[in-house]
Length: 396
Ligand code: NDP
Image 1 (cartoon, rainbow, N blue to C red):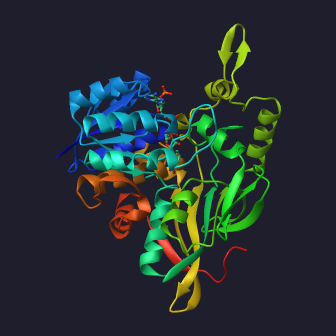
Image 2 (tube, helix red, strand yellow; image 1 turned 45 degrees about the vertical axis):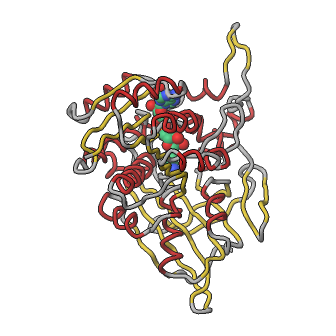
Image 3 (spheres, rainbow, N blue to C red; image 1 turned 90 degrees about the vertical axis):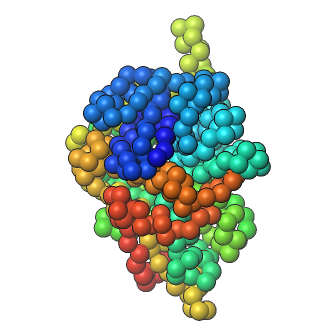
């Protein structure tokens, strides 16, 4: 019997709500709160009124504290934006409430994401006897669990990891992002980074690409990006010598992005427009398709996995662990596209494992700090089945 408060009625938040409802033996009372109340109303309608909804601006810590005191949830699932991570964690500390999210904190005025801000809450969460689970989406999230599972099952030591993320779907729009456009574009337009031989190597944004054979999709061009799970995996698996993250983008997507960048529309520096201060990227977000509303005619698959090289009994081996998800199936099941689905399902699973005390701890944790098997089993039964296969060769 658990009351849960989901904050954020967006593309991925909708999936979390619906998946929690499908697991109502654990999530007995589901509350959804978000800034734009009409989005909560819409989701409640899609759930046949089986949830309770609230209007909340989670940037204001005292508002979140008041709501928590009113409904007394065992856990908050933060499905709002990375900017809200710290204010929501502050409200959790004040009310001794457990916390989970899918993306690490990022200050609004600087496109820099790092776990350092949230890891700094570890002692405070420990003192309050509560737990925070960071990054329980697909990547980060499932990718971290894949690595932990590989370490427990296949390897004595892990040395090299390539996380490969392909969205081979077609939504039919000239240009649309699959999760919050502002966060997505900030992520892609900042410099890339990877870890090699004890050092972080920075590269110009989107300047390194490679043809990668994605499972059940085929060869697509992946671009080297910085992604937050690289930071936590390097910390928790000191044997890693190299770790990189690759994501596909169509030529059409890159062309649009280049033009938008060239004309200044992706800038996060405020400008004065007709006497008002506006941030170009925030304005751009308001004219782009909403990722929560693009699933109707979305076809194709996502294919996301980890290519892992290491040793077993002194022999070098390479494994690939991956999931393939179809946009059409996600739309049918929960009225969402596969990127929202692959984010929302793991958020629900992480929450479930916390609430049934399978994953326990006091303080702030990343996914790879817990036993992987219960999470891997849940992936299979909750709509994200995975496969682990031998690879002939690693990614060069
Ligand atoms: P959306 O923009 O669709 O949804 C975000 C929701 O949060 C919106 O409903 C928004 O409200 C709400 N929100 C924003 N600010 C506040 C606030 N101050 N108080 C209350 N609610 C607020 O984004 P997505 O659903 O696509 O993404 C959600 C999160 O998931 C993001 O943090 C994203 O980075 C993360 N993500 C993680 C992935 C992973 O694999 N780990 C992959 C994809 C996404 P409003 O409608 O008013 O704007």
